[in-house]
Image 1 (spheres, rainbow, N blue to C red):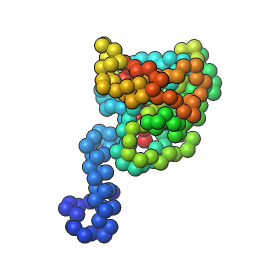
Image 2 (cartoon, helix red, strand yellow):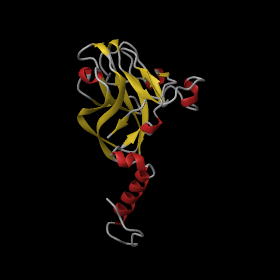
Image 3 (cartoon, rainbow, N blue to C red):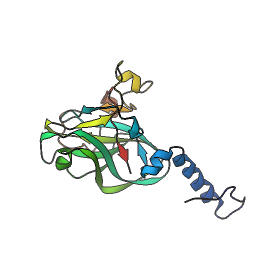
Image 4 (cartoon, one colour):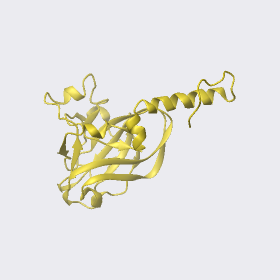
Length: 203
């Protein structure tokens, strides 16, 4: 919703109008994201500079920030090299909160992970969220998991793109291993920080 400024003092309902206008300003700070119709992404896709493969059975988690109360319905990624020999029923995308609780999960993505290009997976049920940190999570299983678009790999290791962050709060991290589905919860402090900045988006 767009408002004309200034909003006259005392306009009813004042609080709603002011809060809504502030949420709109937050979103407009990233005009590219708004133009694409995204709610949040790990970074502008124009900054993608390479690709890296997922590790079979190991969830890959990327942090995004939601700036206003909203409903998340889908997660998107860009596959640069198709997966092969994928195990049916063991490939998923999902959304976790900062405590490591799974909020939403897609249907099996085996067919989608066997292709290339932009892939968007609907969650089996939309999830209403409040402002805060969330983690877009990917899981592939098979002989050769897909490779995904990413930003530059930090040559100095995971400590660079995750500087001042811990395993529990890391921007990019993996684990736990040997998963055939996205677990209901993940112990965030047990994750392994990653030097790979996978690109993903939520809408």
